[in-house]
Structure formats: C-alpha cells, structure tokens
Length: 159
Image (cartoon, rainbow, N blue to C red; front, side, top):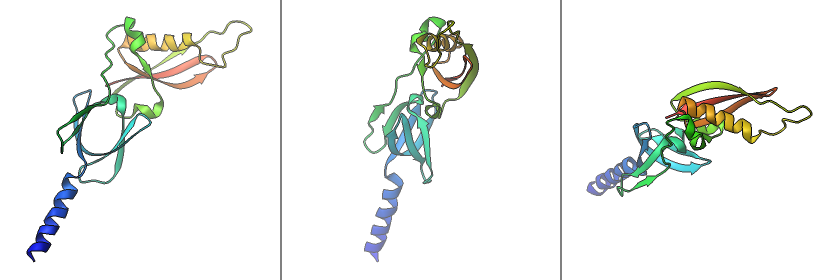
C-alpha cells in the first residue's frame, strides 16, 4: 500500500512540474505556462493545468524562463521607436505573427505609379512610407492588410 501511494504521489507531482515555464513579455506581463515549441516566429504553449494550445508572437516575448533549471532564454529584443527618424527599426511582419500585441492603429498610404509603369510588386518606397508613418505614430511593427488600386492599408502594432 505504501508503494502504491508513493508511486501515485510521484506521478501526480511529475505532471504538475513537467515542462513548467514562465513567459515574460515586453509589456511586463508574466505567464506561467507549459512550453510546447517554437514554430514560424510563434511560441506554442498551454496554460498550467490546461491542455488547450495557445500561440503568441515571438516579437512580444522577451524571455522564456525554465522553472526546473532557473535558466532564462532571451527570445527577442524590445524594439523601441521614439521618433519618425527611427523608421529603420520598424519591422514588417505577417498577420499571423501579430498574435499577442495589444495596441493597434490602422492607416492607409498611396503608391503613385509613373505613367506606363507597373505596380505589380511592392516597391521599396511604399514600404519605406509605411514604416515612416508607423514610426511617426510610435509603433514598432506593421502588417500589410490590403492593397487596392495603389492604396495600401496597414495596421501598426505596439507592445
């Protein structure tokens, strides 16, 4: 009976402490999670005591702390955009990489096309214009949402 009780207690304690991690986000939020994997600039995890899988962008996470070893792994540096001159720091990300960002601002810019020219590809000037607008607003991340007749709609994100 004592062996069964000891074995049962060991199995229960292993499930509580297996893969327990702490996600520390750039905005100061701390989450106790069971880390699953890194994939396509996303962190997959489940909350402690729950098996449902959640995702968060690696751009929003500063550190991943391992409870068992007390080691911290830096996931991404914080991008700080303080003025319009920091437009080179603004990162263009995909829409699915925006999971976990809090604030957002939508804006539209127009790409003029030279007569006889084509706007088949996103030009470097258009990307620079959108990065400049995002930096002017103080947002370090931007996602292209829609392109329609030379009008580019983008959404800017902050921590």
